[in-house]
Image (cartoon, rainbow, N blue to C red):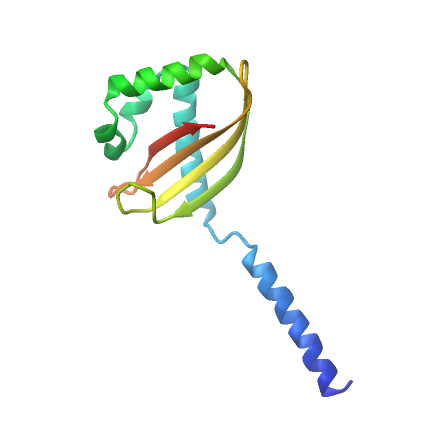
Amino acid sequence: MNIKRHRHLLAIALTLLVVVLMNVDWTPREKKEAVGNTATQFLELIDAGRYGEAWDEATGFLQQNIPRDRWIGKVAGEREGIGALLERSLSETGFTSEASGGPEGEYAVLVYQSRFQHKGQASEKVTLLLGSDAVWRVAGYFIE
């Protein structure tokens, strides 16, 4: 083989390696499990209509911006309007250090594809913030 062909094959191999490495999930499994468990526990409270308890477990940031009674009323109104949860599956987990309007910190955003009795398909987004005590807590919950 000539040198030109070797260089060409090396360039192809390096390009493939870069593509593969760009698509590898470098998030530690334990971190993903921790945020997944926190989001699941939160959603179980919401699904059971225990909106106040869900607020109690949220970040101080959420609690300072949305009073407990307002949170309960808002979430209860949304959830009662769409009916019972029929199906939910995690479709995306992402991590970021920025959140619009939120404090500085490490965030996790989990997106679920869900189906409800009166709404059909919906997207639920649970945003978590890592506290100074190294505990993940809910900083936001949205249904689209």
